[in-house]
Length: 322
Ligand code: OGA
Ligand code: NI
Image (cartoon, rainbow, N blue to C red; front, side, top):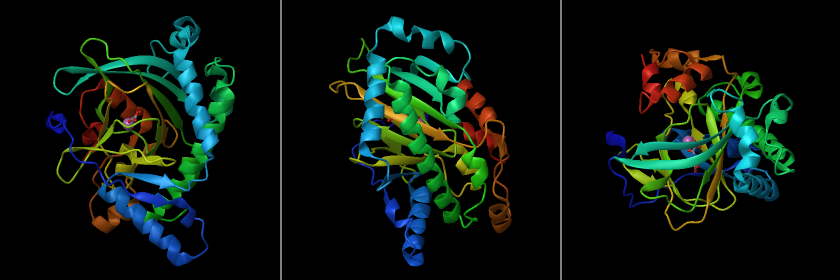
């Protein structure tokens, strides 16, 4: 795996910062500047910060806290969840300890609680019962993030020169899969704490984290760069299915997490957004016509997740290239 050979990042990545308050302005010129910034961010980095996103700090902090409390529960209280998702990778709620090899022979470990979050009513009864305010606080957070994701999706469609309404309804009723990652502070023997290199499957991911550790592959020189955390911002990642939809104009970004062993527990919440599970995503016809070549075959979230879970390829999306 050449992509992970250089794991001593020396540089921090300049992750673009997009001020979302400009999007809602009536001023056409101001809005078009932000759309242009989003275009460049998606094309050049595949990841960007959003600030002035309108989600109250308390909603974000409480979601992180309640997840921390969930992971701190004694094992017996988490068992109901463990039981639920033990076998089926597509279970709507799943708690798992992942250990994947990366960085040569090292093992990277993290705990993940994965929840389907949209429509809320369909899934909330399966979410953890403990802590008692888990459902309320995560319900509030996931609803706010879904609204933000729709706003960002529309802006991304415009940044591709597509209609603001292009696939908007499909995205609105589409899936929201939320992964809460817990990176415990202590490394066990030679196991390191982190997430191996990967791209995210969906259209976009919205991420919040409590501590540094995230690294992003710089597509220009193929090296890992630290992606610093910015207080109050959320990070948006281009996912595999956006790469398909944009006919390769935007590429899903490789990222990984390496948690320094001195850190206290690091938490993150990744919210993956896409269309409905079985819906086939195709490159937008307008972009294919403009370029005169269709670069990817259509693929659903379900099919792509199967490819990802099989862990047969570094970049599962390569299997979709024509
Ligand atoms: C993920 C992910 C990053 C992090 O869950 O897909 O990339 O900071 N998480 O935990
Ligand atoms: Ni990821």
